[in-house]
Image 1 (tube, rainbow, N blue to C red):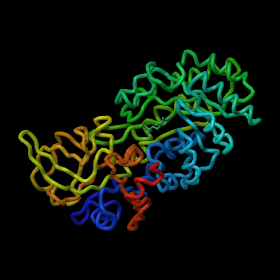
Image 2 (image 1 turned 180 degrees about the horizontal axis):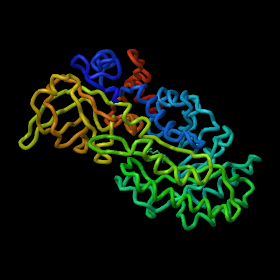
Image 3 (image 1 turned 90 degrees about the vertical axis):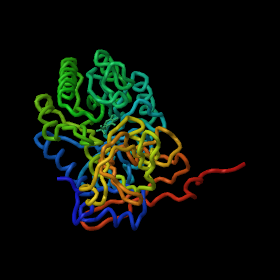
Image 4 (image 1 turned 45 degrees about the vertical axis):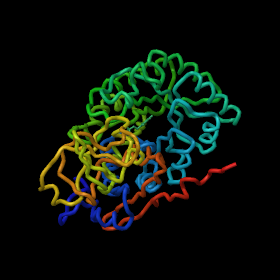
Length: 416
Ligand SMILES: *Cc1c(COP(=O)(O)O)cnc(C)c1O
């Protein structure tokens, strides 16, 4: 059940009307539902309960401390992609022993920091990176826990920018070369092989690509066993899609049902790296209508949120539903509009050619499913302070990140 629903004529997050949040914190503001975070996490826990598993939340989806610590308190680990995310994960209370370090471009300094912290696993993406990690770990007199990120070469049928498991992608080691690289890693004194990993893309709405990929990964693990390369875990990555429009992504239970036949047989600890599916539907971007504007051919609704606050529509042609906060508008006339922000780019839009209830100047609107890759991708373009963030829990709410000020915009700058 969605925690964003109309009550007494107003769109609410759990027990708190969005209008009240707009009145106290202004707009644009990101609003998150703690209950949705807990429900999403619990759905994964239930789905994989029959195998030993660790859910390592992919922090890049939303690295705000309040969100990460809500998940950490439930037992989540973290999948990180930078030294900055290592800092955030530790600051949010994620135990180092549940942190996985992913990404094609880890620096030696980041490797050292993560080794010092004592993380669970490095997901290594190339022969060069493997050699670098071996060297760094030996210099520290330790062994780095390593999984190879294997590219299973399956088409995840998603947007090209977020497809990562194809042969042409920059990510992972081609599955045909993985055996050889594992054998090389097994002979390196600075490494300890812990597992194998895949991550084929994001916003996947069908189970079939996951099934194909895990079958290939499972076959690799078995071949490695035959060559006496043993491991403790298998990491199936993230990528499960959410509902933005009319998608029907598998639920965590359906996703698990796809993977479990292979995973059960391997008998290893299962590592999961969900990002979007834990936080995406837990957030909205609350914004106010500034102006209505008609040009010859088009009707525009200009709102106070823009591509610097939420870049997904501009970057991926992503769809976000936009709902009026006042339920009365839902019963009124509809119209087809472009919903755009104040940024000086024609690519600055939140929706194009969208048929939606007519909204008026000064109305509040909620841009839905904005919990993932939303605030995390916000910038200060056009010298726009980044939005505030609010976490709602039942009838209570907390401003978990204050709106940036103009002074924040120049903090760290020097004029010589
Ligand atoms: C981005 C990413 C994830 C999370 O992907 P979602 O689609 O948000 O679930 C998991 N693992 C790796 C390696 C990633 O890069």
